[in-house]
Length: 470
Image (cartoon, rainbow, N blue to C red):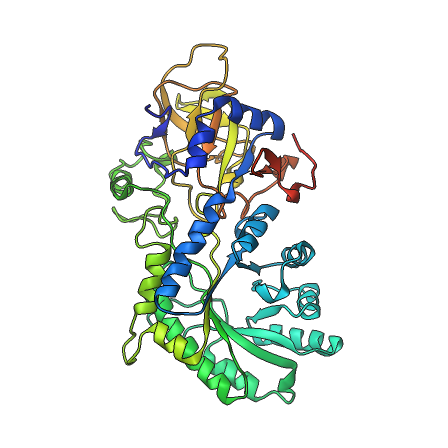
């Protein structure tokens, strides 16, 4: 059956079987909205185990000791944390409340790492009191942690966040260069307050080559730390593990070609001919690469097999001979296929110049990351008994905030069979970052309720404290 809506330049989402079953059941979609409100974040974590498995299989092919940590910031539900723990993963936390939730849930402190970009005294104390590893970003943070450790009378376990020295990589705000860490540690009068148990780094983008280069730097830093009397047991390469939202590479290429050919002043592809940050026909660096290859296991395999220049052994061999565990912290890639967002149509109207608009009961922060736009076609489900006949139109999706640029998505969409108030719209594969990372309750509008499949029924996630906000 042809979709009831699609982008003027289509970008058709890859769907998990559970998504297809749900979206084929109009009555169930409508019931979820009526029960939990619009929008509703709907989760089924059955895909998480296979996503983890792809990474583990790649590491096993190289005989590398390997562990996956879910980046909790990618999705705030308790269900995501539970699913990761059930799959044998650790948890990467970025705030006091994320750490507190993990500990209260019974997550093994040895399977948690604190990587917050800014760490409050309360977060550092909670980590130290529970013997949770802290990724140190800078000297001031190290001194803050030292004071907490002294006051608690314990030795803090830390990973040093490494900023690369390699000129091939862009500058980063995260971490310090290896020489600066070694200088800092060598100058400590009481180095016993820190136990350096690992090395951690954070890279933007998704380049396997860049990660291989920084892994080599990390191995060298590990060797130097051993010389100082430390025993680093792991290297954590953070997140940025690629996934692909689209099956069609052709659609991805054709979208950017169509956008580049959009005449100045026209709105054939995007609102107010927005280029989404692109130059020419190449995908914009300002949006996630919704189609890419390789992903997950094949991508990790390429890293482990890499032989950076000047090294006689590949990355896997460098790790194995030192008995160093490799860790990673995926968010989006681990949650691939684990959620979608449902919203209801509020109204149809025209802009003052006649351009059709379809209003939704949601705002733009409820399906958005830090990227310029969400580049998947939503899925329209006719669930309403329309007040007037639905008619075909081509237009834009607008949201609940009282600002001119309140676009749910900035792309233009075709509705060959029309849409009506109380129809339901689904935004596919939003569990990783797209639901929660920038969500806002401005105008005192409630945040979306988070729902999960418990094996028998759709129920509120425990993050909701069992209070439904309809």
